[in-house]
View 1 (cartoon, rainbow, N blue to C red):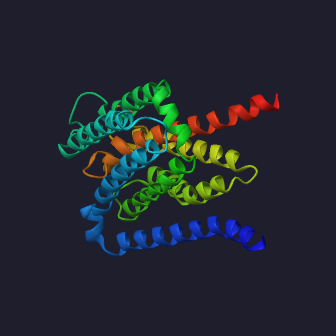
View 2 (cartoon, rainbow, N blue to C red):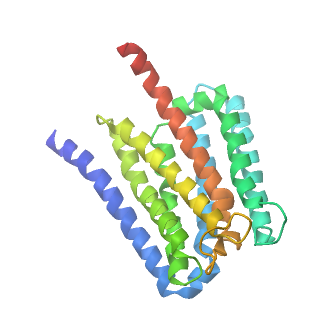
Length: 278
């Protein structure tokens, strides 16, 4: 019995330590090898990997439901096709330089964050099929997945390189890295079923959402345009450049959607307990 308790206790610690070491090595490589940072290869690889993991995790979750094979396929396609088109459209917009200051007359980046996010969350929150998927999927999956948020450490590298103002890079990078570092430990604690693990998962989600809101707000206030109020002598130009701009243009919205789904999943699982206690 003692060995089991020790394993449960050390697993989150080891997960945190392992993620921290990997993040530190990645960040050190970006600083030590400027060519790696300028190529932005890490962002491109991470985005593609996360996209594939999301689609794979969706199929794995559907395989746990009582849906028929045909229903699973059509549900997966109903998620995979719009998600891929959304990702592709964001990538093209970023690659074409449409998010660069002065490229278009409308605040395109804020629209790309707010409109698709609100639409997707509204549709998914009203879908019974998504509710079935969330009930069948382990609650720790949607949390552990967001370990990719450590990629926000790229903002630190940009700040050290002098391309991003600290007033944006430091809060945005710190929040992202903390969210990413705590994703796997939180997921492990939640899977263990320890008392308070659901509250910890809810807090992690709220922290992650707050981080995204702060980053988007500071990004808008430091980027050249009608909303800029900060960093007037050293504006934030990376939010519109390829491929770094794919982070606010697509990673931020999809992260918000994952948070919303995780919250819905956690709350769905606590309601029966609350009713039983009443």
